[in-house]
Image (cartoon, rainbow, N blue to C red; front, top):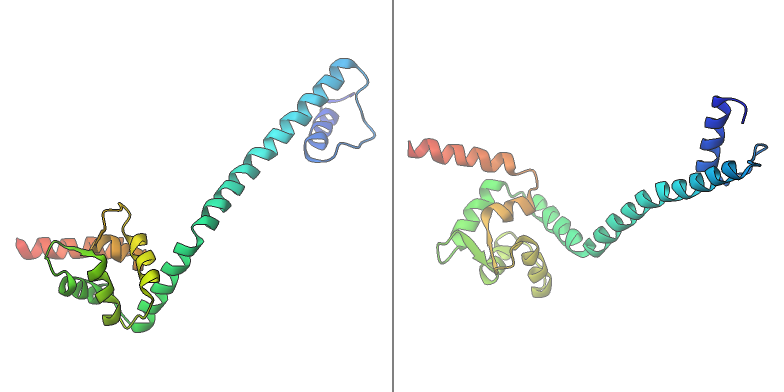
Length: 166
């Protein structure tokens, strides 16, 4: 390859195409270089494709949970509930006063919100909110699941409660 620019062109051509060109190596070191470029380019493209495939697989496995969450969010929004409304409902239904809902308490929440779903679907939605698997859901996790942008709300409520105590 007579010039540096042509060698760069050849390198890019080998790495990103099938490699047919009017320039080809004739010496053993040149052929070895091309083999290294071909293997490197395969690895260069295979790794990101594998990462994308893995991410897609994880989302695909999680699709049912994501669809149930989306359905619940739509129903809550359609019913016109605000984070404050949900906080009041949560407090009313927390029968044991531990600031967490069990599955039975969670099931009682759904009719109050005018949301009808089978017990099986309700169980799957509950498990979505119960990230630690202990069988209870606290209000922060529930609100984050229903209103994902609720971090601001939780900070505001915390500041309000703090100022009331001062």
